[in-house]
Length: 219
Image (cartoon, rainbow, N blue to C red; front, side, top):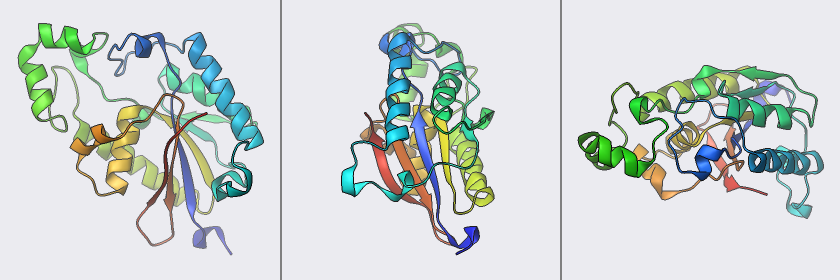
């Protein structure tokens, strides 16, 4: 079979943890590095991918062959550091793409939810009521995030037919992509979790809509 007649698999990885994650601070497009805990998470996931351990006879097909494409990553440091550690497994290059960035939260970035609610109560109330379209001052909204990430992922699937591609991004864009694949309203993204350094999988069969094969697997 040629590549054009085979499924393309995108392994979607949420970046490993930072001190801001642990402090429940809104990171958005601010650029904190991984914490030591985060680096350990990335090392553990890299070792898992290297050995494909833990799956036994039920190992999914997407782990049968190593990726051949570059590891694509958000250009934010927490994602790049995660991607670089995973790329070492197969000695792959890392290609940073700004389309994979987290949503920009404008003036909320660096604050906790409680601090936002206190400082900007009207914006916070709008976010609670309309989280897919609300736009904090200086930010984008989740509809725009979904548009940019879906456009990139579909282009990746087209340009890497029949391959397995590793993509490192953030909770917001990855949840938006999963909602798109499942035909879910963006408000439904709060009904599932993506842990730091978790794996989710989108499969693109030729000529068909994408399929969600895995969500929030972590080691």
